[in-house]
Image (cartoon, rainbow, N blue to C red):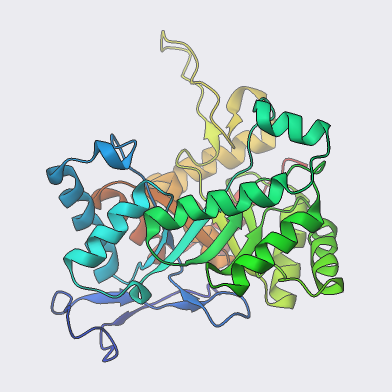
Length: 345
């Protein structure tokens, strides 16, 4: 059974006296993140600035529209947001506009490491420069906090270079938690064994352990995904997953369409390279989405929720949020579930 299968009536007397949601409105029930004391919304809204690339490019009208979208999320109980130093400013503006304390929302932020072609990063790796990674982590978190304006509830280590010092990263994260800039951390580990290695190293040195695991839970996944889901359930580890907006598949145009194939998207699979079983799974996903009148993303988000995974869905307007909310009413039958359970191997 799905861990999130109901929406409860708004009757929370502990909400701020400075702000009152719309009457007769429903709110999504919050869920505990792993074994932590943190409660999050079961769907995390990844704030996407459509045409707003930097804080300086804001216009009052656009910023107001973005704040209205955040308010729409907040009123319906979607109060966990994935932000960066740019869109974090829009979230801060929303809190100020409605006179809400920062504690009314939960903030998740991703920490990406520099690409391999970054000259400074390359030099630091080649010379095994001590302290570079630590300095980079502190700098990035400071930039995130500048936009967010408060501590980060969940800091996600979204990528990791195995040639770097794990000790240096864990030590830096422990200091960030100790001084209150970050509350909890997660990491994207390839396997359960890799995640265990991180946890054992942290425990050995009395450093902060990771409270969550990150997945990319599209239509196709490897057997490692099942191992991580099982391990997380048994050990109280929170699970977060990006849900690809295209369902994790780069759709190939039909043979009657005279246009080039769709470009490969990040974390997506090209239909031209799928086997027969995987094609059937994709066709099943399309059919389920059409039958239920929702987007493919909604079906995959519902599937993630049924696995105890809290999906992150990108939204830049109210329509996107309305689609995300449909995941709570989208239930998969055993037959539909089985038709989607295919692996890349």
